[in-house]
Length: 385
Image 1 (tube, one colour):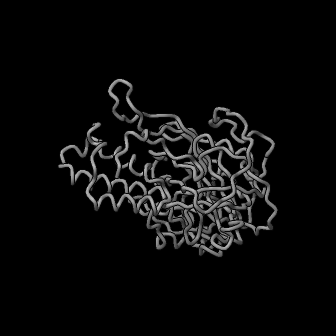
Image 2 (image 1 turned 120 degrees about the vertical axis):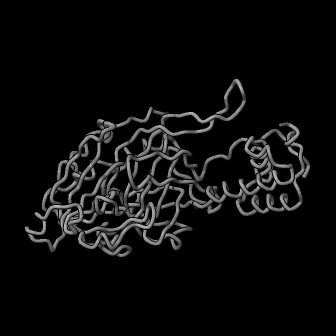
Image 3 (image 1 turned 60 degrees about the vertical axis):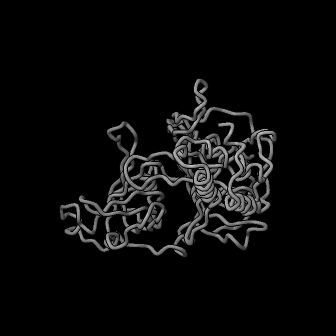
């Protein structure tokens, strides 16, 4: 293994590695370290050294492309809703103390989500206009969900990926959210500027093309409930009917009745019972078609004419946010405010929960845009190129 770290790659590979360092604003020594870490892996051992170097470079390129798909920025945001903290197990690589090899182990982690209207501030104000944002808090940062309440306005710096109709934002280290002061319109007014409402009866013709490709479904609540899955986890069910449906239309049995739609909530079962029977709502959801008809997997419920249920935003807000849910082990209070964005910080990865089945946590935890880079080998381990 030590001989590999003294190997000088071909000139074309050196040029590639230098371009990676320049494009990502990463020190060359760190790029070299990552390259040699990959070069030493057993899955490349069958290749001759020149091809092994080229493959290691391309693998590093793919890893950097995933990491730097996200940028970072400081945002002001108005909270619409939030989940409780969810505990899950994820796989991560750790070094086996006996063999020195990297092995996959299961570790406990946490997540929570904040839904709201987000807008860039300062240097990124023009780049990131006001639109729907979904902020995922990973690991220890999940405890930050207790700092916010619906309709509160806050500021913070996040890793993000911007889409035409939404922002996906991430936070991986606890911070203290700042207090915002902007006048931000209601969610139902903002979201319809970027997404066209789809009536229940037209959902089969408007299926999601991929995970995170949400549809804005408009319907009236027929019923809602929270029940236990076969694995003992809570699931939320929200049954919608089309606004134009007659009583006879609704009574028609079958999985393919276009006037009825059941929306399932995995990550936040409580969202399903935010609003009760008779409410007119928008539901942000992924949609798909299967043997049992049209399915929808919900992310958020936005009232148009809402009849609050017991889990509606603002209901008993003085109660602990995580009652009956996972608790993040306490850490020392964060003293510093969010660091203002400089525009050149290393961005974060993110993972989107699956659209179907029980939620599967990401295998690699996202990286905070302001996090320190992973350690690099001592200078004597590096070659002179």
